[in-house]
Amino acid sequence: MAKATHMQDHFAQVAEHYRNVRTTDEAPIHYICQRLAERGCTRAADVGCGAGRYDLLLLQKMPELHLLCIDRSVEMLRHLTEHLREAGVDRFEPVQTGVDELRLKDNSLDAVFTFNAIHHFDFPAFIRNASRALRTRGQIFIYTRTPEQNAKSVWGQYFPGFLDKEQRLYSQDQMRTWVEASGCVLSNVETFQFTRRATVARLLQQAHARHYSTLSLYETQEFAEALQTFERNIQSQCNSSDAVVWDDENVLLVIESQPSN
View 1 (cartoon, helix red, strand yellow):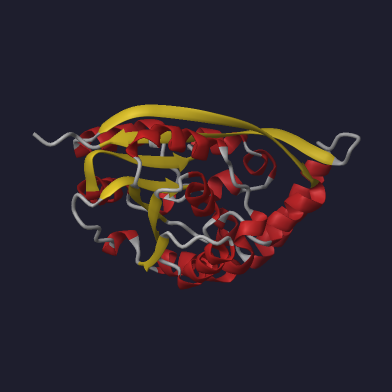
View 2 (cartoon, helix red, strand yellow):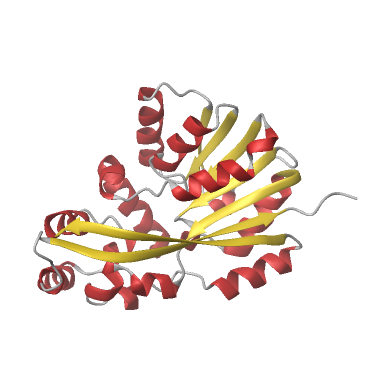
């Protein structure tokens, strides 16, 4: 309960600037749109939607999409609503609830999404709730990173203690086992690789903003010391343009509900 409260406090604090300090990947959105292209009018839910950075892309690229934007954080949903309305989008409904209390109507959705949030959830419970809500041929899309992929990131490589603090990520084998146990079908696992480039100033801005919730797990003095070491580490990796270059990987799981008999 204490961990859950800590995370709620963290996301309340970062909600206002969250979209500005996180990196949003368009490649998985293009992939998802292709998978759903033949459905026409689509009703879906994004669970753990945050401040709406992926939701805006989905709604812009899928003109017949109607989206439930679900998050535990009231502050995140407030910023999501402002963000989508400023973009002229109204095909969404914010829903304030946690995954444990999530009650989606049976056979009501064509798709369920979650982007970089599954490590905050009880994975088997999420799959059970999402699969019950899916119509025939409905799909669940889980965009995340594995512990191995996390270790390759600039944070995993250079931020002291980052990998020890981040113990919530699921391995691909774990997720596959849970999907199979649920009676759903893991129809595809798509890996996305990105070459990232960022200045030292940008990386330090992200760290100060606790853009990854992992960074909120440090005590105050511990974080200050780790941040100093991180700055030295990445300074040593800079090229002549004062930028750090690295490769990130993420994985997208595509899960299909079993067709009704």
